[in-house]
Image (tube, rainbow, N blue to C red; front, side):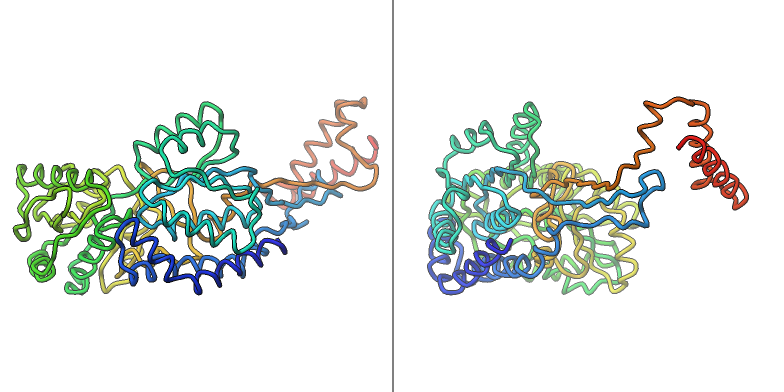
Length: 461
């Protein structure tokens, strides 16, 4: 750890001095403007480094198990829980946030003491080369951090390799295929498989704020965000005012270019299906094509529509009215994805109660997306979103395995006598006393158990 953390610090400092070069690489790959790369990638990645510098040594040091928790029958034993590296971790990276998402996973894995095989996305090769170069300049050994080719074939080879754990960020269909392949060899994995996030706008919400939040959440990174707001459940008393506030943003929208033309076609299919089944557009917008895609919001959507069921990486979203929270929860639960959600209300207590009923891994109250980048909190979901977490203490610990080391001094081993010695009846009587003295419901029973334990133990040993 004393060797690794200075390398994390050096990498963090390089993020500052080389930020312009990193921004240029991301722009070359996916067309992201420099200010967005700085805000959404470089700054949170630097904060993730700082979190590890401050907390990793404490989180990974051996944990001594308190003696007050030790059962009587383990008298004289000392226990410690160590966090051991998994070994060789394969990371199959993503392209939508090529610095932040890949970088956070890499530095956590290396900090935990693992070796890394990194297969970056074929959509973002320049970003991968720039990130790898900075980690090498920071001083990480070349035999512990290997950059593979940014090809689909390299990803398939990685899942066939002799790795101990795989971290994958991508689509649910690819994640299922990876899980099946790794499962045959009982290799563990962390799967981050996108989302179809819900926003709840309650009747006492700040409606203009909630509308701005939905527009931001649907259009950040041109909609190419796993935490994008795809479904807004709006309580009926504020439904009309919410749609009116949202319209002001939609009327000013411009077409955007997506990194994957297939996502524009998927968005067009989802919107066309929703309109054919009773939905209506917030504002008219031309359909998507290979070159451009308009942000489109479907009003009066229904939860069973594919638009509310499938993960998409385009600026499309649905608005659904509801009367009661139970109705909203029922509609939300029909979606197989469970990554994040947001709740807008002036009643914080009510929001926290609602959050407890959601299946998602992250809930933001009166905000969307940004809060999930906190470096000290875990990132992950359930259902079709996958399993496991990255980021925060939990993400760091996920890159390790617990190992219990128990130490016992002296030569007193009464448990050997139960297997090797005579007097089975007395042994049973002693065990009854041990059980009774520790777990009986009344003080008198516990005292009686202590007497049985001492009496039989003295005669046996």
